[in-house]
Amino acid sequence: MERLRYFSEVLTLELIQEKCNNCGMCVKVCPHEVFEMKDKKMYIVGRDFCMECGACKRNCPQGAILLDVGDGCGCAAGIIQGAFNGTAPSCGGPDEGTCCN
Image (cartoon, rainbow, N blue to C red; front, side, top):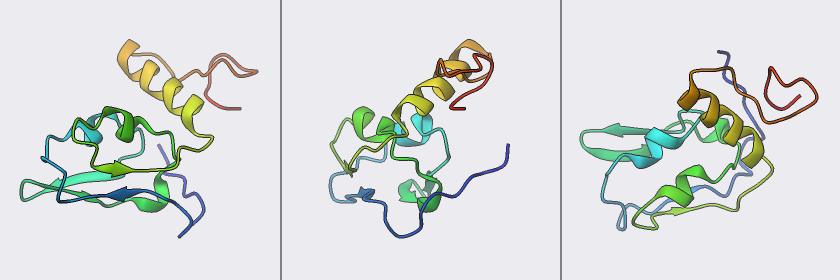
């Protein structure tokens, strides 16, 4: 799948290293591979790919992620639901077979 870039340098995403316990939950729930673990430490590696869905923030047990959640929430839910079900992403848009038309 081609990675879509959103607006550069306007995202509010921040990872507070002092709070992070490096559990990797953000890597598991992020639909756009924004986070990566390197040498047992979490990093933001794809900042411009974040769609501000908030999955990382909601699932961080340490509260180490700061983010003003934007409009990507419905699309992320469709992507994650499709991944869990083994089906194509669907957010209930005009074309039920795809996400966020």
